[in-house]
Length: 311
Image (cartoon, rainbow, N blue to C red; front, side, top):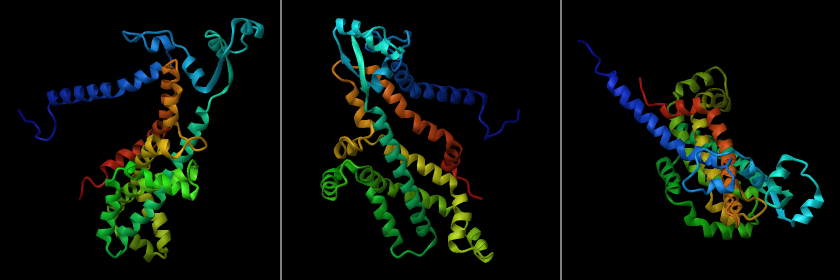
């Protein structure tokens, strides 16, 4: 009976498939639980034993996007019947909606700062990586090690100097300050990742373009960048994940104008432990990164395996 030494046997395929499914279930279970908690009532969210089957409600999302005021039964009866479905939800607790919450503003701050810093990190990282890859830079190895060493240090270790510097420069609690900070933190990762991708692109492609009359900049934009698209996409995802989830600097350097969603979501809990609203905020917070990753998933998979096989 002939068999291949490279192809897995049916038993190996079955074992690998089982392990992959088990890993996927373990990984996705907390995420699914958070999403489900966003549709629970406060009592169901803290019920013991935990409720897997429950009556779904949008109370958590209503509490997330609104601020509420408690009123006496007489004052509520004077208001008449609730005009909307979310008013009816709030009236169940003898409360009325007094205005919108600040979650929308904090979410928008996360979008501006996260995507803004990601764009700058990838843009500057691509230029620096191309220079290190194609030109004879003095002390190239030492500079690359210095760039890498900045990634070894925990960012929070320099939190106090950065706080003092931002206060002197007037960058505290500003979008520009947070974008520049996250760009500086992500730039070392961006340069190192993109240099590896650009190194894998044959320099002969650019030489052929230069012979055809292209300038160095045209060869870079029309030859190198399309070839490095997989690396740029992969790097953008990693930079966005850091900027999007960063908590320590956001707590220390922002308080109102530029505060992002991560430090704001814990404040939703309040006195009554409103876990459905917290879960709703966390669920919505996951959506942009998830959509961004799904849109670039093909580039991400190609970027991870790029250069793994040499001919």
